[in-house]
Image (tube, rainbow, N blue to C red):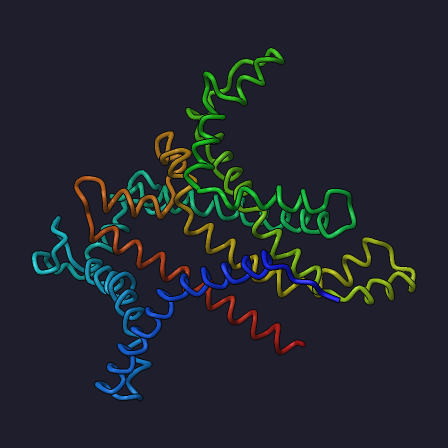
Length: 344
């Protein structure tokens, strides 16, 4: 039997009254919106309503994506310091010819735009070191986090946490840690009697740290993708392999890797594209220095466009070449995905 007191009824009535009062503005807004949409539908017709709702997104896409692409393509074939298209002069392939104007193509220092070739060389070095290292480490982390270990949830969060940080914050933290005087790493080395290392003055060290910081900041993201791929593998396959006498390494080689291949392909393409486009971490951490030791292609585009004398045409030409490289990587990914599907 349920007994309801007067005080209980009063509290219930008060709560219902407050709820009704608070819902009045919401209902009023909905009725007003319905009247506006109904009037608009009668004005332009029912069939045209979807285009009306898509229009704001299309305007944003045109303003911030399509229009800059068109201007970039136009600037690549024009010259001058003005950003106004009408005031720029047509130079055709002049910007591309200047990029490859070298006395001896095998000697970068003889090229007119030698910094461009330094940037391409540094980007190539960055990619061939960072991409394999990222994939191998991400796979090892994913395999470890997929096991039944203590504090597994904590370690998963810890590895993913750097991904949530701003690239600028990550680079500033590591820049402070690498300082010759007062930096955390050199301070720790001092406790063991080791002389401070001038990381920021050594091109080799700074390229190493640029790659290291990039891996440290993004490792959790790719490990999470691989972890999802590992968890999609049916456990019954491991049990069958174990019954057949397969060792742990054999189960990894014969079961895990073949079934994880599509996920590894996705990670490979993502890391390649990000490596080619790398800018934020390295720019804040090293500024491209010392000298041109860590200048990457995107940073070269940025410096050429936004630092005096603001050569917009040259920057646009390099960006088109970079877009062509990314398009090739995308086509390779599509071809590999198609082959993978055909083999299933």
